[in-house]
Image (cartoon, rainbow, N blue to C red; front, side):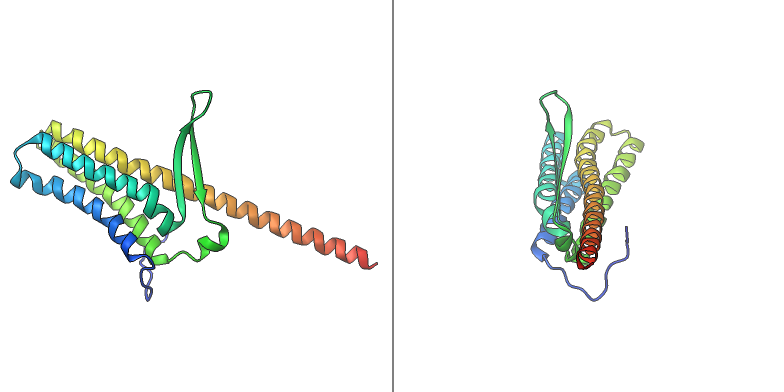
Length: 183
């Protein structure tokens, strides 16, 4: 994964990028600033978790599809087993994805999880065990998206490689057939 920001390119989907960042920043900002203005742990817990849940939903169902062309979900099959499902755009559409949008998507996904981990460490150091619960929920939602989209990206790469192999084999066999049909 290339972490350097693409130069000379604008965001193709600025609104989606805005909302992709908005709920992450809102959850983190509310959690950090709430200690200054709110005395109720319940209010801090509810508002922070709702903002993190909104972030989870936006990333999973909207920004992941628009910014990087990926979507994932989890189903329970007839045997009661958890099955991951992945969806990605075709190879041509993936190649046209905006690099700056993709860069923003992946960086904010990982940085948000890192920020929750740092806040969790501070809560443990300050012996605020109840706040570790808030962070645990937010971190779980963040990590679920990281795992889902990372698996989805790997699955998309496998699909692209299989498509490329199939296309090359198909062209090779048609070339061989046309060569022998001339003779």
